[in-house]
Structures are given as C-alpha cells and as structure tokens.
Image (cartoon, rainbow, N blue to C red; front, side, top):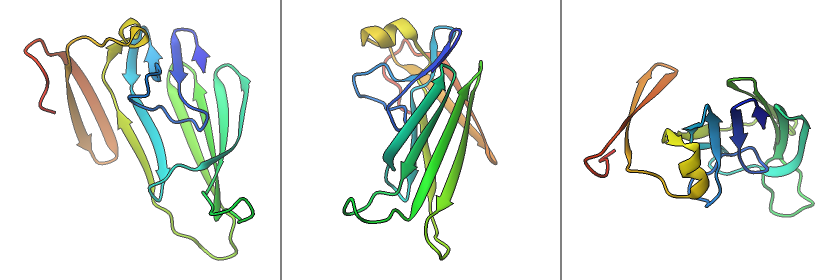
Length: 154
C-alpha cells in the first residue's frame, strides 16, 4: 500500500511481521515508524479468505476463524479495512457466524524501531535505538533516540 512517501509492507493477512527477512513496516519520509503490527483473535491469526486491493492506498483483508477441517464452519469472520492517506487508518469488523453470542479476545501486537528505510532494505540496522513507550488510558506514545553506547536494556 502506497501514498506518496508513506507506505505499508505486510503479509497477505495484513500483518506487519518482525524478523522475517522481509522489509515489512509502516514507512513515512524514509523512516519505519511501525516494525510490527499483528492482529490476534484468541491468540491466533485468522485464516485468509480473500484480499481486495482495488486502489494503491486502500486494502481489505477478509479473514475467518481457523477450523479443524475445511468443512467446518468458522465461528467468526473478520474484515480488516486499511487506508494509507499520509497516516495509517484501520477498521476491524467482526461478524459472528453462530446463532448464539460468542466471546473473543482481540489483541494487536505493535512495535517500532524508527529505522531508516535504507537500513531496512539492506538488512543491516544501525546501532540500537533507545525506544521509550508511554501509556495513558487507551493512548500509546513511542519515541526514539539513537543509542551509541551499545544495546538497549528495553
């Protein structure tokens, strides 16, 4: 997904995976601001049903609950709608496929490294950056400072 100098590189389910050997991430102005963005429902990835990317800046990922066999009905379906328009916007819609209520635990695994896009593409990140993370209610804030004294203890 691409909008000018802002882009997201991820897998077919919409996840941005760390440590895959691929240059995954949310990049803007030659900096990777998000190095991990993974959605889990009840601790697992959804099975990919379909992807729709009719525009370069928008995509929809259609996922379903994993099943034991291909003939089993998924307990839920999930639509992950993403738009990149100088910022990253994502909306999740969960559809209950059962006639009775179900309970789900949604989790987003997020990380950042503020790496230079050329470091990421070449696979050789520079000395670790000290990443600070703060949380106030539902809001999260991350910051970065180049750490030239060696590995961070975070």
